[in-house]
Length: 57
Ligand SMILES: [Zn+2]
Image (tube, rainbow, N blue to C red; front, side):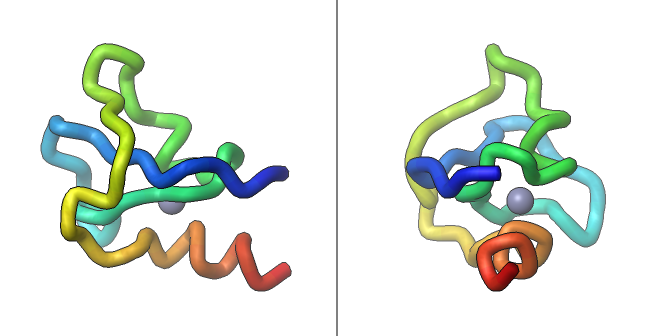
């Protein structure tokens, strides 16, 4: 696993991971983002809870 630059999707995500940004390259929610919907940056969103959890390991 690795921490990466913040990224998010422009497509609506399923709850509870909607409208968040990710910063782990192995986040299961982040991995579901289609390449064409992937954007860099936090987009003013809160951090993904799963990424937060992965970051603390
Ligand atoms: Zn995430």
